[in-house]
Image (tube, rainbow, N blue to C red):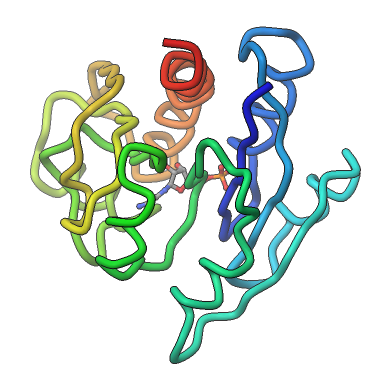
Length: 187
Ligand code: GAR
């Protein structure tokens, strides 16, 4: 059995999907042993409903160190599921190959500092892109630069807004994120 620790900052719909896919067996041989948030957010309640241990570690001076201490030693994979804090290079190095992230665009485009959530979808629409999608990748010290595990794209409709794009990207995420987690854990 592989142990997953999930880091979140928001509503946690991807977290919910991961919980459901573990229950249904789409993600094999895994359990979530800890959910950690960097702010109060609905995702924490989702975890609590499923009796998954939660921690809240607010961002501050020694955030990466505190976070590292809060991550159970027996974690096999750290999953960033809508986690909006930047992690220190030392942290990324320590967990290299064992930490993955979901990004709401087609990396290497529209990644890097400040590129999160609605900012990404706004930038994609403004730049007149013909397609968008989602990317699951390993986390390295370069923001959104690690090796890509899975990526899926779709065509942008001319009527799409940042909001409709966000919804479409989420649907893609719900599909590729569990697959990527299963792939990394059970390769
Ligand atoms: C997801 O779309 C995820 O790709 C994005 O935050 C959303 C979280 O939604 N992550 C980033 O922007 C990271 N740079 P959720 O809380 O409903 O899972």
